[in-house]
Amino acid sequence: MKDIVQNLKSEVQQVLVGNILPYWVDRMEDHEEGGFYGRITGHEMLMAEAEKGAILNARILWTFSAACRLLKKGEYMKTAERAKRYLLDHFYDKEYGGVYWALDYKGQPIDTKKQIYALGFAIYGLSEYHRATGDQEALDYAIKLFESIEEHSFDTQKNGYFEAFTREWEEIADMRLSEKDANERKTMNTHLHILEPYTNLYRVWKDERLKKQLKNLIELFLDKILDKKTGHLRLFFDDDWNTNYDILSYGHDIEASWLIHEAAIELGDEEILEKVVPVVKRIAEAASEGYALGEGMIYEKNITANHTDTDRHWWVQAEAVVGYANLYQHFDDDFALQKALDCWEFIKGHLIDFKYGEWFWSVDANGKINREDDKAGFWKCPYHNGRMCMEVIERF
Image: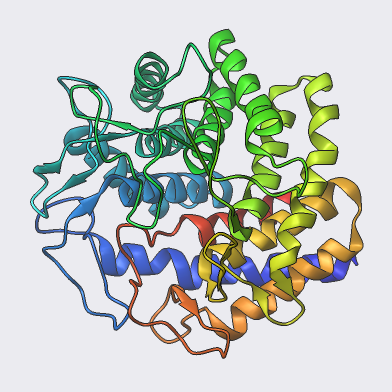
């Protein structure tokens, strides 16, 4: 088994340094207007005047900071530094705090809403940059963003975090993260991506208030977001944590299984960890309803609409590898390791673009490549697949 794991580790490192990271350095750095281009289509066409999204920039910052820390390669720091400077100089709102949702290609704000999900990723990237370099400015801004989330988004009455606000932190009618989401005030997805950066920030900033809120987030997943009957995570909620949606997101389930576990381990609270361990296993088991040997993991099932999306998205497969590797690493689950290896074989066979670099967005149930969605863009970033590679390298 040790040889199998070492072979996996070797293969993902080759893909990371030879396929994923070079694509973003060589193809996406914008040397005309600064930062990074906003989009490359699924047909490899650069859209130099596409809008630039906070999510893309923050995820590039996290990815290259983590790669520099893990692989000790200075060239990755140049890209991380580019992302950090652009985030702080262009996306950060110096008047009201927080980060803008989107800029035009020249770096001017065109959507100034404060989507808490985006603030979370900015914290994730900045805290990782500090972790890699010791840079105080990055940590200071990560803390400022933490304070903005806690001041404006945290629901002091009914717990949890609200989705979005105007630039001035007022109520906003459309709180959706994307067009496919329900327009609700609280969502699993945003809570997951506050949990994730708060965990990383706590690694480098042992603040008691942060510790309290990280613990609270873990408990929210256990008590409010987890469907105790099915083991799946519920996705959309009103202020009182009621939900009218019956949607299963297999990728988010498997991703959450290891992120919640990671948060509990980092928190260092044995009582919380004891509660989390069985839940980690249960969520991963529920996610496996979307997995089939040799076929990867499907995207989601909308029970309410009686519709199943059977496409195999790049990020879902990447998170499946990490989620199953986590079960093997911590619980000696050999069957989970086989699933991780199987998902990796599916990725190699269907999603990695060995000709141009990076990964395709998805393939359908018949293995047909989706070239209509981006190769790089607002949501297509080096974070899920890059992180998968680095998680395997670090864990083994």
